[in-house]
Amino acid sequence: MLSRLRSGSIRNLDREFDCTVRLLDDSEYPCTIQRDAKGHYLIDLLCHHMNLLEKDYFGIRFVDPDKQRHWLDISKSIIKQMKSQPPYTMCFRVKFYPTDPATLKEEITRYLVFLQIKRDLYHGRLLCKTSDAALLAAFILQAEIGDYDAGKHPEGYSSKFQFFPKHSEKLERKIADIHKTELSGQSPDNAELNFLKKAQTLETYGVDPHPCKDVSGNVAFLAFTPAGFVVLQGNKRIHYIKWTEVSKMKFEGKTFNLYAIHKEESKIILTYFAPTPEACKHLWKCGVENQAFYKFEKSSQVRTVSSSNMFFKGSRFRYSGRVAKEVIESSAKIKRSPPEIHRSGLVPSRSCPSISHGSRLSSVPRTRRRAVHISIMEGLESLRDSAHSTPVRSSSHTDSFMIRSGKASAAEGNERTSVIADEMYSPAASVLPTPVSEPGPESILLQQDSSSSGIEERGSEVGSSAAAEEPARGAGTSPEGVSERAEQEQVNTFVLSVARLLLVTVGLLFALLLLLIALAESDIDVAFLRDIRQTPEFEQFHYEYFCPLRRWFACKARYLLNLLIDT
Image (cartoon, rainbow, N blue to C red; front, side):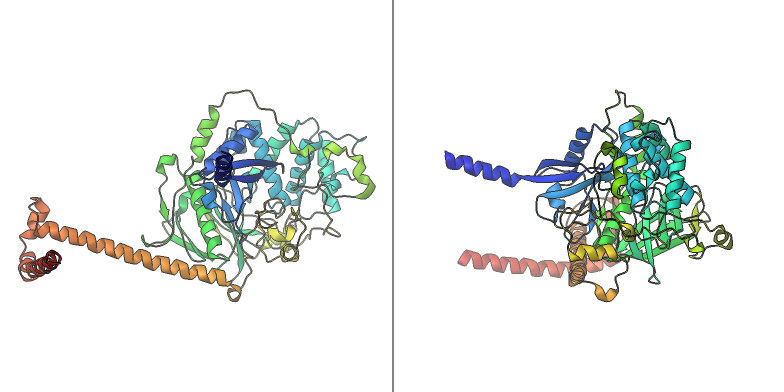
């Protein structure tokens, strides 16, 4: 009896796996998943935990052992998507940014999107002018510490918060000035909504950059936003294509191609090269999902797409969720009392930590501070007021298509404004890591190497085998540095393509054989078959080739049958 209980418990353990999901407020949600559980089970579990109904904007991200990011497919088994060993670590993040945050029905949804965009601002993904940056940071202060109080907030209180990768004392004073004079009286939810409305007007709103190289070998970051497809180089947006103009996206190996049709019916093809085939596939899948979510009116219009122009090659993928319009319509029908919100501004956070400034830190109430302390980057650099720091500037989201050169125009060069970003758009250079375990030499090297592909905060989105959440090493990797694993994957992909070609060829020959038998041997009286049978060419083929071949097969079959009978 005891042995049966033990064997039963072992079988149950084999069917269950521990999983930890890091939420947007940096709290952790431990859970257990069954072997056959699909992705939507985990999403539903998390949304029930957070009392979230507008869940279609969110997704679960994880990192495989090769440091490649993935979005959890809600229609597939969780365990089959994991390439690492349990226990699993995943992150709950905004996957589809709302086109207009004001359309979000519930405050809890707006709050979670607010946390995500605050991360984007801190990690250098949301680029903006100094004036916009000061206003956004002031909204964060208002949402997290409330109205300015001279007794609680002494001179320099805004410097105790790290809003951006880099900022100056002048910017800190401007943030404090706006917070003191312009935002008094705003409740946390109003401040968060105003923050979202302002962020939504910026060109890099919703950007999740993918590091690539163009055909000239220049580093570029590709991204998909609610408005369309964008390419960033330096700190400028050089391409912008609306979703309605994107006709298709394809990839093969490390090569990503985007096909678009301009207003004047001119066709445009953009080609970029990802660091690895896995990164390229992830880029393609993100593009397919974003286009389906923002472009279509109904989810029934979404079709399965192929990654290759040849039907027997490449990957096939279909977005399986609801589209933006359906989500908005569904949100409008929500009728319930607003759920209680526990704001993370009052609890520890990996995303926007307070920076220790000695005794000045005690002047802010402990419950109002970020509690995760990190080593300060010595001497936070001041922003350069030069033409090279011209803010991202191009036509609005309503423009149909835009191609700009990497050089700033003369008018822009004369403005001499600053941006809250590095001179080159490279989020990795600005990340302040908060590793789960002690950082090894490899993670320190990744932090310092600005050519690495720093797409997501390393401390907050890690896989179970590493304290980093990035694709395989960086956009600046040379072709000579491609790993043997990547080469092996390319060989496997080629072999798989050849196998598919052979399989399709055999299938076509078999179908042709069945058609031939139907023509020559069956009595099916169908118009098009009758017309074929009456052609001189078919009659000649039938009597000169098919009949002798049939007699030969019949003779061999009788011979083999006689051998079997004799034995």
